[in-house]
Length: 346
Ligand SMILES: *Cc1c(COP(=O)(O)O)cnc(C)c1O
Image (cartoon, rainbow, N blue to C red; front, side, top):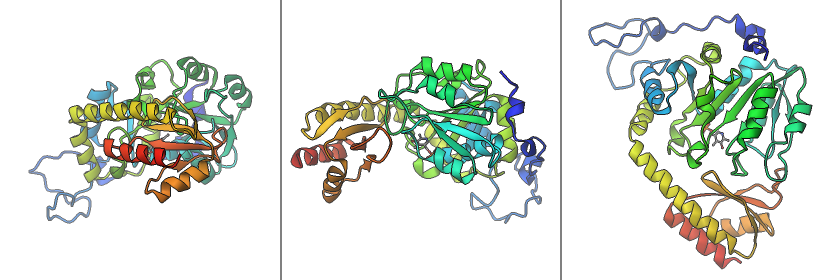
């Protein structure tokens, strides 16, 4: 394994981060007079800049996830975290990254935005990584491989064996996107950072935690990688309202586990019903809060659902997903409506 240092762009290595007022003086003690950040002094709850290092939120996350705060970085959604990773490791018009389609569309958008070549190595017919093809695709300019597990839109998890192969045999950074990890029994890779210095794990509060609207993504990596990403993150990327709402939600683990349990119950219910819908040809197994189905004619069925007030995702144009629809698990009532309309239109 090459030192991680060799993978970082030269300009990023020498960059001096912006030192914000709140970075220089952190004390929140009430008897200090803060005249350092040109803020409005009249208290309305958000008149002061937020904590740029989100210490309270990270320490709560640290307790829940059992990962030290210095191995964590928070972003304005995972999308910001992914963009920062591109900018730390990938030299525009020079480096490349590998994705395994069909997968999350943002990796490709971010590669294009950052002028980074994208090498696509399709999943096999079981929607598992094709290890030999991945290892063959890697060249000296390959900096990142994205593994989304459970994968969007296929809903399955990759085998630990194949993930471990990539982590061991690739000398660049392996980014494991665990946006749906809370819907599976499979273990998070975030607790194996010590074993793999080239591992970055991404999670989000947008799915299981029910906080898509506040935009909070989490990146776990070695404290060294985190310290480098920290240098280039916008100083106040997580606003105060987001930090407060995230804390409030994280401290209510009971509500969270009840909601996940209910979503999993509804998933079992939908999986069973879908098996008996005549125009459904394949119901793929799911480790996520959505189900991928292959139907007789995806576009026709998509339009019929729309006409009946139900919006799903038509994935027919993705490689390996011909005639596939992706259905998010809704509430009991929403799923009942879906089921009755599926039965009606067959
Ligand atoms: C939904 C999703 C995300 C979440 O992105 P946010 O910007 O955190 O909302 C990340 N990765 C995958 C694969 C997703 O499906």
